[in-house]
Amino acid sequence: MAEKFKSREEAKQYVLRKAKEQDVKFIKLWFSDILGMLKSFDITVEELEGALEEGMGFDGSSIEGFARIDESDMVALPDPTTWRILPWRPQEHHAEARMFCDILLPGGEPFEGDPRYVLKKNLKLAADMGYTYYVGPELEYFYFKSPDLTEPLDKAGYFDLTPRDAAVDMRRETVLHLEAMGIDVEYSHHEVADSQHEIDMRYTDALTMADNVMTYRLVVKEVAYRHGYYATFMPKPVFGINGSGMHVHQSLFRGERNAFFDPNDPYHLSKEARSFVAGLLKYAPEITLVCNQWVNSYKRLVPGYEAPVYLSWARRNRSDLIRVPEYRPGREKATRIELRSPDPACNPYLCFAVMLAAGLEGIRQGLEPPEPVEENVYEMSAEERARRGIGTLPASLLEAIQLAEKSELVRKALGDHVFHSFIENKKKEWDEYRIHVSEYEINKYLPIL
Image 1 (cartoon, helix red, strand yellow):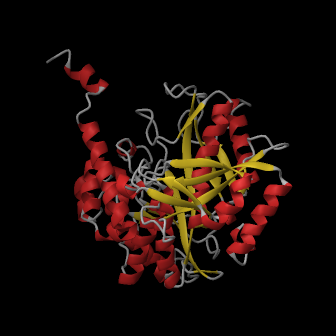
Image 2 (image 1 turned 45 degrees about the horizontal axis):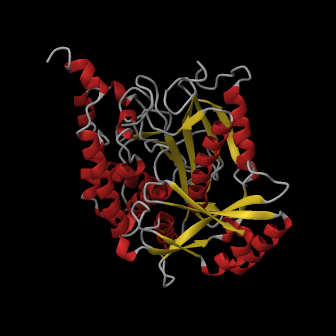
Image 3 (image 1 turned 45 degrees about the vertical axis):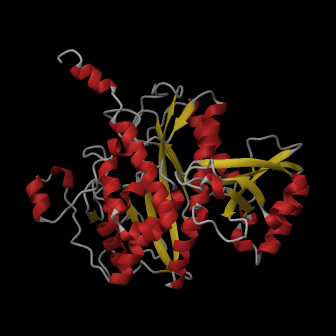
C-alpha cells in the first residue's frame, strides 16, 4: 500500500476516509518489544485523527527492552500506510482496524529501542549505497490440540495431501485472512513433520515484510484458536522430529534491477551477491543470537534434521547454511540467496537488520566466499570439515551470547540501547535455564544417584 502515497498527509487522509466508509470503531495500534512480542492498545475512531497527527502517549517502562521507570514516557505514532481492517472481527458494524506504530520520545525523535526503527536505520544505510533490500521468509509452524500438550492433528509429511481436516481448513482460512490484509501468499503446504505446516508470503521490501511476519504469526494463532486448536512457532517443540525454521530468501535491488544477478556467472550471481554471501558466512556465528534468540532455538540447530549448522553455501545442497535456489535459473528477478538458519520465533525487525548488516559489510570489504560445497556436510568427518575450513554456528544460547557480545557488527546494527538490553535479557534467560532441573535429569539420574 505504501507506494500509493506521495506523502504521509495523503496516507493520513486515506485512513480517515476509509475509517468512515468502513464504519470502523476501534483501531489497534501495534508495535514490537525487543523480543519480537507483538504489543497493542486500542483507540476509538474519535481519537484517530489526533493519533495520526501527534501519536498516542503510553508508559514504556513495562515493555521489554524499552525504558527505565524514570524515563518511561513514550509516544506511539501510527504509520498510516499500514492501515488494515481485521478480517476476523465483525465487518458490518463497528469494524476493527490496525496500524503499526513507530515509537518516539516525547520530543518527537525516534526511540532507539524500537525494533522497527533499528531496521529502518539499517535500510537507510543500504539506501545510501543505492540498494533496496527485499526478503521472502518461509515460516514453519505446528498445530497442536492444545497449548499444554504436543499432540499432533495429523500423521503426514512434506507436501502430503491430507483428506479435508482441521489443518487444511485452518491453512485455507489463514491464507484468505492474510490476503484480505494485503499480504500476498505464494504457497501453503504440509511440512516434513507431523502437524507441521508452512505458508509462504511473496517477497517484498524488508520493512513491509517484518510487519507482515508480525501479522502472519498473529493470524495463524488467531485462526487456530477460533477452531479450538493451538498454533506454535516454537523452534523445536518435539524431540526427534524436524523443528520449525524461517528460511529467508533475500536480494538487493538497484531501482528495478536485481543487483544480485549476473547472466555470465555459473550461479547467475553478481560480484555483489557473492560478497553478500561471504559477509553472511563470516558474520553468521555473531548474528545467530538475534536470528535464533531462545534457549529452545538450539535444540533445532543440530545435525540431521535439515537445520543448517555448518558455515557453507551451495546451489542444490539443503544441508548448507546458504543456498542459491534454482527454481528459475537465469531469471534476473528470481535470483536471490537463501539463509536457512533463522527460526520463526525471532524478532523479524532485528533479524532482517543484522542479516542486512552482515551482507553489506561483505560488499564493503569486497569479501569473496569460499568454494561452494555441494556434498552433504553432515556426512563429512570433523577432520574433512576442518581441512575445508567449514566452521559451525554456536551450539547453545550461551555460545551465541558470547559471540554476539564481542561483535562490533551486531552492536552497530542494533544500536547500543537494543544491543545491551537484548544481551542482558538473553543472559537472564540462560541463567534461568541453567539452574532448571529438567525431566531428562530426573529420569536419567534419580534412579542411579
